[in-house]
Length: 356
Length: 132
Image (tube, rainbow over all chains, first blue to last red):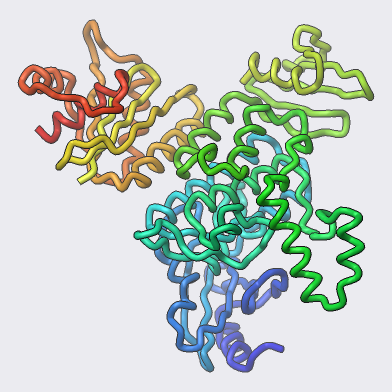
């Protein structure tokens, strides 16, 4: 039930904004979509309860602090009655979760999203802020495909003495292993979460349903637990153990057209060893930019994979145990045995070396 | 104050950060521009440089000017890289000529900090030249 204060404010705002809809998924508070009748800009209006606790203004304050194309800008913010407040942001065309759901994300598109997000995260870290809840649903996409970080409901300031902040209780599946052990969250934790997002963008299997991660024996135990709360705690515990064991990612589930170097970087960055991870957003971004230069723009297709390069396209057609390579340089598809490797992945790498 | 000295050779920029008080080495990175005709690659390179500078809380960037003519004249990629750097610097920016760096090296007997690699020495000297 919408609080009276929010209803009144919506009524007041409706003089300027045409309310078009409401978001129900994963929102703390109330989120409405609207159209500004004057400028014609589509916006999102978020209502949240602050109840005289200035700390609860963290989200709009963080958004207002940055002037980065990779961080959602804030257009207005105000206090309303009964401890409620609201802020207005531009409405984005889509988010990464929707993009992943649609499938067929190209390698360059995935890397570009990673680079954009790292740029935004770098700006946060430079101001001693950690996001703590980077996941596909919180990464928004502009019409032109540029990614921007949204939902700053979990941001926290890094304590200079310890270089970290208390761990967030959001989305256990995205929680870094070190945060599970120490209940603290540092800048490298944000980079871990970006690696998970990249893993999903590249097509790695990462189900959100906790039941997927349970073994048959654990499912029997789970079903025998009476209360929902205890069952949820049991599932969380199993997920935590998987994260701590570094078994949350399945490298083999990343498709063959994604290069081995990209797979290695993502798996290393989302691994349990802190020493093997890139320590800063800049270093991670630098690695992604180098890898982007080493590969052509591959995308999955029904027959295998198709890649676009400057001056043509290549496709690796997989038909059961055999595969072959075809190149089109503007005169139709022609088979190219010289590009063919021992397996589809090797063929893609040969094509990358030749055309990237 | 944290300074960043940048020396460009061919398509590669070497960035070295140091503290102007202690002259201690803070960090170093190498940035490569592979395709100077790809606007997206130029933008990404610029963004990466900006990211490194912001991350290290850089207050002043000192770039060694590329020689326009002569025996040691720089290639066109070096000039593009110089422009990309100039456009992506989020703080103060200064250019020093190779002659100033050479004069500084002659005048001062610089000791390189431990951990500085050979290819980073030029960028370090560029930053030192500005400190004087």
